[in-house]
Structure formats: C-alpha cells, structure tokens
Image (cartoon, rainbow, N blue to C red; front, side, top):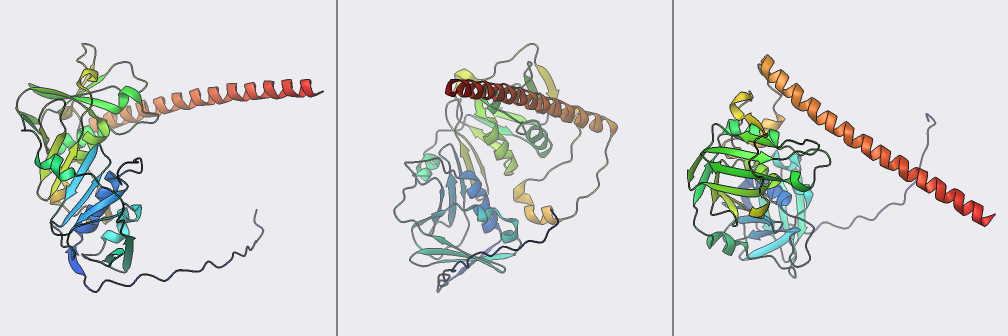
Length: 349
C-alpha cells in the first residue's frame, strides 16, 4: 500500500462507428425517458421470444417493452421507417445523461437504429431474426372493465413507501391483495413479521363492482411509480391495466386462491395517519429536471419523525436478524468443512 505501481495493457483496436442515417427525425426528450422505462420492463429470462429487446413501431410511433408478465406501450413519437424494428433493451438507455438534452434525433439504416441526444450518439443493432409477442392484440381485445381504482398522489406515495422491497423478501411477501370492498385496502405480509399489514388508502376511490385481486407488489408499485393514478380491473383472473395519455401499462394478476385474506389481528395502517409530501404524476412533470434540482427543505412534524423512525428501526431489526442467521449458517458450514478435511487427512495418513 502506498507504493506507486504501473501496469501496461495491450491496446485494443477500436472498430469504426457505423455511418449515420441519411434521415433523422427529431423528437422531444420524452423519447429517452420512454426508452429507459421500456428497458426496465424487459427481461433476459426468455427462450421463446426476444423479451430482452424493445419493439419500435415506425408508422405508429410506439416504443414497447415486456417481460411476459408486464407490458408498457408508449406512443406519440416520430420514427423515419415503416414496420417494426427490434433492438436490444440496453441499460445504457436508462442513463440520466442521455435525458438532459431537450431533443432526440432518431434514424435507421439497414443494420442499425441510431439515437442522438446532445453530445451522445448510440447505435443499436437491428435483430431481424428474433420474435416478439403480439402484445397489441392483448390490449385491443381485452375484456370489459368492471371496476376502477383511483389513487391520488398522497396515497400513491404512502403505499409505494410501505411496499418498498425488503431484504431477503420472498414467497408470500412478494404479493399483495387489493381489497376493493367499501374501502380500498392493500393487504400484505412482511418477512419476519407474524401479523399481516392492512394498508388503508383513505383518499382512494373504487367505482364499479366490489373486487378482491391478488397481485405482485412490484408491478402494482411500479404502475404508481410510472405516474398512473387510475387502474382498470376486469376481474380477479384477468390482467390489470392503466391508460393515461400516450402510455398504457398492463400486468398479469396472480392466482385468486392465494390472495391474502382479512385477519382480525392484522395491523391496520391508514394513509391519512402518515404525513407525506405530495408527489406529482410523471406525466405532469419533467422527472429528470426534478432529479437534478437541489433538494428542497420540508417541514417535518414530530409525528412524522416518529413514524419514520419506527419504520426504519423495524427494517434494521429485520435485516440484522437475517444477517445473524446467515452468519450462523456459514459458521456451521465452515465447521462441517473443517471436520470433513480432518477426516480426509486421517484416512490419507
């Protein structure tokens, strides 16, 4: 440590960049946001379809991403080609640096789709052999909506914070149940806690039929984080959907038989009992301009501080407990290895 060192590496030959397309269409910065959101919807876990790719529909001006269980369609863009092109869902498109420019130029050649944002130019190779599912048929021929859930900003922030992923979360803790019967309740089980949590969204409203659905907490939470404030439901066994402006988000629900049932000893937490800072929908703000803006000071009340401290302490206690369990397992495994090693040495001698 502290001794200067030098290492020589062989020079890697850099391939030449592809040529720029002869025609580029100008879009606003919303295109880079849409590409990033679509990449976060894609997955690498698929053998039948190219779900690790994005579909760019030229004449419709759509960006589509799916992992087979959730689907995000965003349109209103200008693409200078006909038909559909498949390009890799490269995580580079999620970079904040690419979203700072006010406009994005996009074009294509026989092999590449090109995006130019400010000083950055990205080429994504077109995949002509891969297959992509016919997701538009799912959206256009969906069943009739029987119930609608409207979640205002304050309730959205409350439940997104409550359902934030926990360490070592698995099994029953990965799902939540939306109980739309009189009041809007989100029932969840948290790892390391015996009693289930009933989060009551006091400001939210249900219209239509009473309904109870079982869903992934990640997809429900993501719908709200994407800025959707109205969720359309067609039944407990059909996909949930959100539509707002130029965006559509759809996700598959879980088996109704495994829904979290009401419990008399459940811990009831009402959204109005927790102070929170209002959060605007994504569609009504420049998200990345807001991220670059210095944090504004907020008025903090004692009740809010105590609630946050209790939540933080509970999460830390749970994490420490899991760490101790892991250390104990490692210690036992190490002792087994040591005994086996000593046994092998005795046999060899």
